Figure 1 (cartoon, protein in one colour):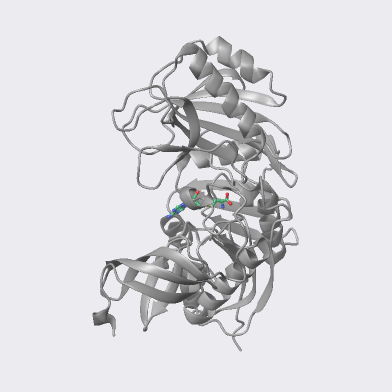
Figure 2 (cartoon, helix red, strand yellow):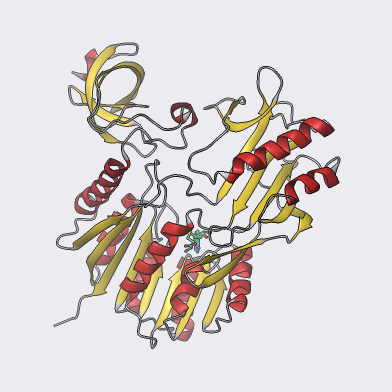
Amino acid sequence: MKESLKKNDLVTLSITDLGSSGEGIGKVDGFTLFVKDALIGDTIQAKIIKMKKSYGYGRLMEILTPSPYRTEARCPQARACGGCQIQPLAYEDQLTYKENKVRELLERVGKIGEYEMEPIIGMEEPWYYRNKAQFPVGRNKEGDIVTGFYAGRTHSIVPVDECFIQHPMNRQLMDIVKKWMKDCKAAPYDEVSHTGLVRHIFTRIGKYTGEIMVCLVINGKRIPAAEELVAALKSVPGMTSICLNINREKSNVILGSTVKCLWGKPYITDKIGDVVYQISPLSFFQVNPVQTQKLYRTAMEYAGLSGKETVWDLYCGIGTISLFLAQCAKKVYGVEIVPQAIEDAGKNALLNHIENVEFFVGKAEEVLPEQYEKFGVYADVIVVDPPRKGCDEKLLRCMVQMAPKRIVYVSCDPATLARDLHFLETNGYKVKKVRCVDMFAHSVHVETIVLMSRVEKK
Ligand code: SAH
């Protein structure tokens, strides 16, 4: 039947799933089509824009019968922006979709049999939840300075006055910077000609401390009329840090490697539970502090610590999970590939007077096997929190050899999670509990946490 489909054909289909970027997925006579902006439950008319061997892409032409889950997106720019791919799904339905996705992958790819799926932890307030924003700066057609987002695959900026997942304070901060740019004639950066000064306005706002950082990312070494910018910004209650980040590269990476502090401290502080963190513009820090705390509490519960355990926290970043667990463990070892993150981890341990942690820089799949072979290191519990690609098999093998009683797997990609759990289940572990945590409302992303126990040999 597929042979009869070709580019520019108009087809009718029902959307039955969402892809990894939130695009609708449906079938036409058994042939899979991906259609941006179509929602699960919609029946649509689409125009075929690209054909591949086993799938194709369509453009949404008309929604014939809207999905019963469809609501009005709160943000008028949701469709163009692409940051909130599933904003038109009612929040409760987003949660159901995410949980079903995880369950389906665990069963189909992971071949996981019996386990307890605890209810997904959704957000009480699924708006204004991010603590970090990075707005590109440009000009609109009239030549006014605007902040917003890059319209898909172009260099033009779609102005957005308010982003509903960012802290409302951002609006005031953007207005101050835009006014300063206008007054002192600081030009926005132009990606095509690689000219102009101000590339991005980067902000962080501490959820629990209210401390604010504004960092201008510039294509230069300094800014004109710095005193005026500082004077205007420091009058904002909570302002703690005003910085410049130097990025003179012709690239779409947002931050450069040099930071200069213009006023205040070069960092802000914030808390997760009782642990305090110093966060500089270049530090990695979870963007949703409220849900992070719930995620780490679940990690703590799954780790089942009594105070006597030795724990390895692999892919530890700035040591957030390590420090959280150290409060209830004998000793925690963290491993992370980025040296600056480990520097932050060490500083945060000192700041919180946590002494029972030790950090290693390197690849988890190299550091752990080396430590195990050379020194026979031991673990009661191993926690892993890998990036989307999941764990290296070499690491999983070493974990199995070390035979901890429990493994806690924190994952941002349920497909690689399912693959890794399958490996561990065929090598002496059993999935006991699974729980999803929604860290990114209105996007398709979902965080999953899994408790595995070692199967006792009879
Ligand atoms: N657990 C941390 C960070 C998790 S993000 C937190 O909750 O904040 C995943 C981390 O894995 C990143 O910091 C990334 O730099 C690191 N990473 C990526 N590949 C790695 C590898 N092969 N070995 C160790 N760390 C790695």
